[in-house]
Length: 605
Image 1 (spheres, one colour):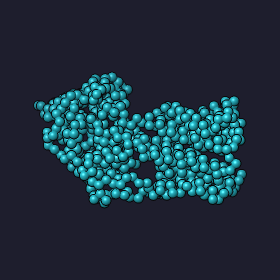
Image 2 (cartoon, rainbow, N blue to C red):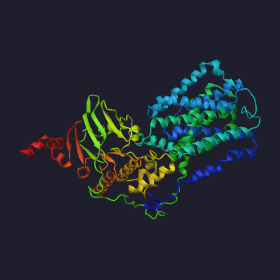
Image 3 (cartoon, helix red, strand yellow):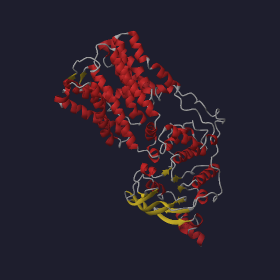
């Protein structure tokens, strides 16, 4: 769509004031200790950089991917031990750092494959279990790891060995690792991969329907996080010059780095570092001032700060720095905050501009699905043709949504097949939601599933990324779609702020940004007032007239009669009628399914 077809575009994403302030203060982590020149101050700032880097790396999994990993010390220990074992062989820890990162990434994927199938606290418990197993193995293989005695790192000084008599080179390396992790996290947050991670964290089914291979992106996230954690572990092992299992594979250490991110604000770029900047100086100063009498005081400090954050700033310290209104808001676009841009495709008479109904594009044959002894779909077959709107109706509990889940890969039928025609390939049989998305099938959900913490525009971008991998191209497509769906004025709002009608339009917009050839609509008009129903009908007509084939589950008979070329009626998991809408609604079998046998007999007497 040309620039003249859209209102003025808002300015590109700008960092929040909090992030800008954090970036401006970042060089001080290196400059301040150089100016003071005290060894203890050097040590404190080295510790801040190391823990900040570890918390930032953890945040990729614990924040963006939303998986509470309490076993991240596994990768930290692998990095330290890999370099520690190679140094006596004359191999520089710089090479050991790369080797440890690769090994940690592979271990992370191996652990993630079973653990990512778990949800909630079970995932966290599984990561703790893996950590304890690896710790016990490290204690057992004394010939390799030194067991409980540990390993002393040979004191070979110089840049090649990461060991120095002066403190500033160690600070420079620690600062470099922090900058690396922050840079990777900042890139990730604004790349397609980062959007996919956040979407998977918030609404995994909706992300899968948008073409995201949710397991794959989580495995990529844990591999990246593990590699960065391992690199920090390598340097920290060289800095300490002593490596032993109880410290390297410590549960308390894993909880500690997760806590820094939680205090600062998980799922943000600068949050983990901000949390580290608050807590580490407090604990290190207490240790320095009180000495042995402060043994265990760090736990008290962590707990106190965490309780205060949870009570007063539940979003973390970054919650104190709310974004200022985005530049180029509604006023700059010449719109009022509550206005909605009209759909770019005007409503048309039912037959005007229609493409002819073509060849079959989706075929479902003899679908059976049982849950225990309950048969939900029984020998269901249907065909959708190019350019057609196929309505699916039936009383509650008829199996409509279960059928939709089979037509989009969310449920595998016990028997039967679903085939989708793909240009250049003929009919294929996708098996997973993201495979159906690649085949051109997009769907909405009976209960809307927005990515609530994202803006309206970011929600639509999740769909746009399917065919537009670059952020700029995806944003352009999302803007175009937002305008077409009447969501232009709300593009900067968080999705959770929309009305139910707005949320349903947003879900359709996210799917349409994928540029599907087949659209599955699951009760998109349920709960809408009469004005919104009419608007939704015009919207579906415009989508249909653009060449997209539609299957719609709907209880609003006004919509079914207005939109459908054919209607399939389900009852108790079986197809009981099929044909033109006007014919189907007069079928006695259909009337009986909706109103009961007594009603039919009373009116036929």
